[in-house]
Image (cartoon, rainbow, N blue to C red; front, side, top):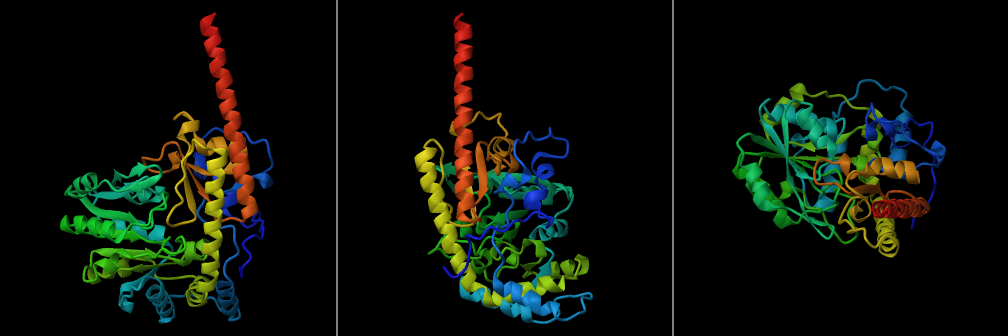
Amino acid sequence: MHHDFDRLIPRFGTNASAVEGYEEYLLGPNSERLALDRPQEDIIQMWVADMQFAAPQAALDAMAERLRHPIFGYTMNHDDQLYDAFRGWCERRHDWSFPREQMVVSLGVIPALFGLVRYLCGPDDKVLALSPSYGYFKHAATKTGRTFVTSPLIAQDGYYELDFVDFEAKASDPAVKVFFLCHPHNPTGRLWTDAELRRMGEICLANGVKIISDEIHCDLLRKGRRHTPLAKLFPENREIITCMAVSKTFNLAGLMIATIVIPDPGLRAVWNYQHYPFINPISLAAAIGAYRDGEAWLEDLRTYLDDNFLLMADFVRQHLPEARLSIPESTYLAWLDVRAYFPESVNLTRFFLERAGVIVEGGEMFVDNGKGHVRLNLACPRSVLQEALGRIHAAIQAFALTSSRTENECTQAACR
């Protein structure tokens, strides 16, 4: 291991959403106040999708080099440095490339989703996604006045597959104009096979549905796996927009930069006319540096994440035998089924925060089809993961004991 992923890095005082902005986001602005019996410094953050690891030195060095130039005026992606670095990355890792003119830059994938929905859909149109669904897919549709519909995935012992009968029925609705593909999938971690991708693509394209493929997790795969961009399977098609970013791959989410590949020149012209063109010069430098020289860091990270997942899987088998965990093919997010331990009425986000001092995202945070699950971010030092799992186990045990006592008391009262 060449990089130190065991290092503990406090984030208080940095305006990090992971440690300071979670309550309103997770529970809503008008929710009942949390009943916490521990200081904020003792809360373990395993929710928002950024890492508790230092960014790669390649990105830090590139930012430091840019800081040596003392002028930080309006900046745009004028030259080919980012394109050359990003295209080279995609060729090496995904055997995929695209012309320079097709690549545009956004302040993030989420802003791109919001903009693209406005450009591609009318007010009466619908946007389709698979569920459980990342919440911002729904927001990108509903907050722009469009209707959001989902095709539920089918879980088989924690492994998720598409229901193609339902998917085709939803995609054939004339009002559906856009399909948000999450590839790899958040929160389940599925890395869709080439056969699944082809079938989804063929169904959408046959029905005139444009595809926005969010591939932001594409570099965070288990060892031995390889990502296939959807657009690679349809090289002549102009209806597939691909969204990628350094934000997840290199833990640079706060820099707000994403690369969007738009093959359709008409849509690209709309994007360039409507879209905010400026970019943070430090973010641009970091993205170029990471794509050029960050590969060794990523490979060490993948090994570390694989071991974290093995540790969690072993812990669940030993201590939570009624829970279900399938090690995901991708992402650093574990999707844990704890329905055996809780009634549907329990808000799992609030429960684990109050009872265990661990911030996770319960299934209620995801659109449809996520009840009784929690999403845990395993991109953290191993000591943090071990402590969090111990707390989660203890909280579940205490809840089960309390529930058993309550049930016995009710039974005894009924007998009297």
